[in-house]
Image (cartoon, rainbow, N blue to C red; front, side, top):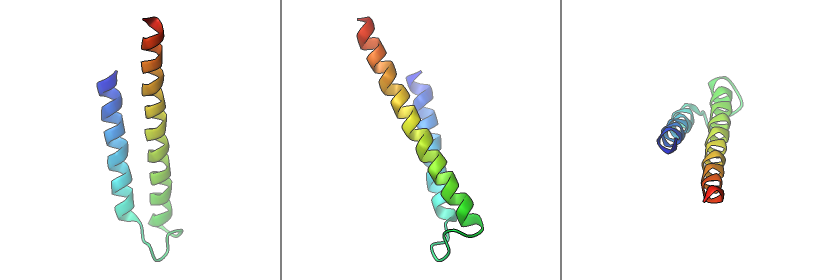
Length: 65
């Protein structure tokens, strides 16, 4: 499970970097830039959710011991 979440976090981070390259800093809320901003926000949310999931699994393992 740890490897799977690590892979998903890496993919989400790669999507953040990719969407960051699509941003037009002159007009960030128009056209493809808006889609890029939404993609960045969604990827960051996915990263945070996966990190919370990983921490909850560590806590669960400690409680079982």
